[in-house]
Length: 272
Image (cartoon, rainbow, N blue to C red; front, side, top):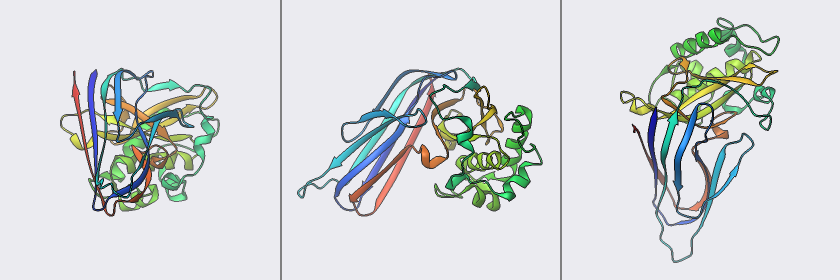
């Protein structure tokens, strides 16, 4: 499937902005699951690109205001064409961290005995570094049924355990719960950010899912959409991956001045 994406983030401030340093995880890469035919990112200042520790393409810019500036608005936009192939299984390059790195606890997807107890209904404790795909898909369905999708029920700081206990969340929370359960039982797992095309589900245009390692020895992974408890397919565009949301958000930064900040995000995805 060929998809055209437009992603605009509009920042507004109640006072003049004096300084801002922002890093963007807004550039998809060609991989077994997709081919990026064209992509561009725009920002208020010149962008500098590099790779992070997880192989993601990131871009950063710095804004420095003067005493006479009255900048109260900034815009970041990304757009491009991606051809998706629906390939869910793949092997990591040797340059990426070893699968067992993704067993480490992180704040948003920390292992916990309650999560492990729930997970054992679907998958056993990992013993040999391999995983059963059908069992993982059953776990994803169990997570989606337990942490029901509910818009605006959580925020970017909600942890996996908090969402699990609340029984509600968005795709980010469902992904974090799945990752935390897998880690609790010894299965390397990581968080994936991206886009999802479905005319009937516009709220999921900005989406999140998980990678789970199927075989540590061969570095073989599978991408699972927990919200839809299925393998990723041609509707998914992979953007970035990391240990949890904090490792690969669309944007992260610091600023001075600006007062109160408001942010409006608009994402459109259309077949071409």
